Length: 359
Image (cartoon, rainbow, N blue to C red; front, side, top):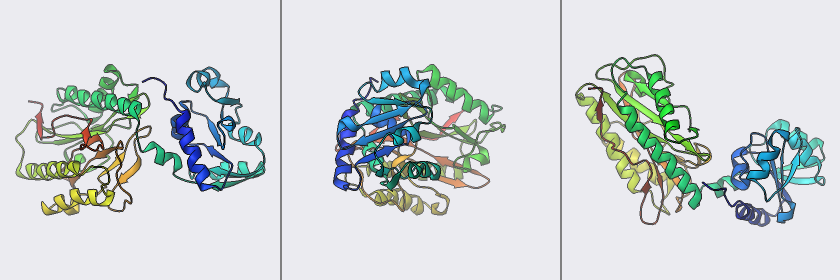
């Protein structure tokens, strides 16, 4: 993906700050938000957004002199290892807007330099929830790599192979297909471990009749994919396995169809929850339906029973119901999709049926 055009993004934030009216300057410290607003991807940065574009200032340290010049050529820069203190110390004392993620130590540093932090949360995250054309392209590429890698991994899933071996193999395939990294810690849960939604893969080896939940994603140009499929090892499915897989597959299809602009987030979650409840497994669906994905793996909006708000066009969100029977096994099916006026555009397109592997 070519470098994002970040000036208009800062201008949209500037307009929100002007409407809020409380502070003349806003300090951004969250690295994902800084990358979104500037294109800079270094591990140390502070961004100041002012009332006028000429007030904007990006601080980092000497390790990134060349990188910041390449990734954020349109911004004034301030180079100092003690970045936050130095950048804020260069500003006139007074009220200054900060993100809700500011640490207590950072807030104290601002206060010690003569500034009163005013927390204004969620502004950049709200902007990030709507993905532009370049972001959608990166997400589509990450998701396509993920789906292709899952298909390749299926050929390696056989009795005697450990969860950890499969997780590392999948991550290798991501790299072979062009991803820059994994999107998050790969989940591979087999047998009874498949009933643990965020199981960390370990030494347990696959055996005939095991359900295997694989939840993983590739990362491309900083953007994260998220996909889950459930497999069955070297056996015909037992009745209970068919039943929970059918319940999840039906709930996922119904919920996916509800992902439309204007849809109430809580009501969409209820579509999946009610479907699984009707199948008799409501007590075994223990998490929310989905979440936004982008520069981080979990971002706005969240789709769950306590969510507020609605979906908008060009949001990129997961849909991932599951059923988990402790000590026996579980099923989760997850896709990443773009919300559009024409209906959901699924990015992780791959079969969702209960696939038998290892024969």
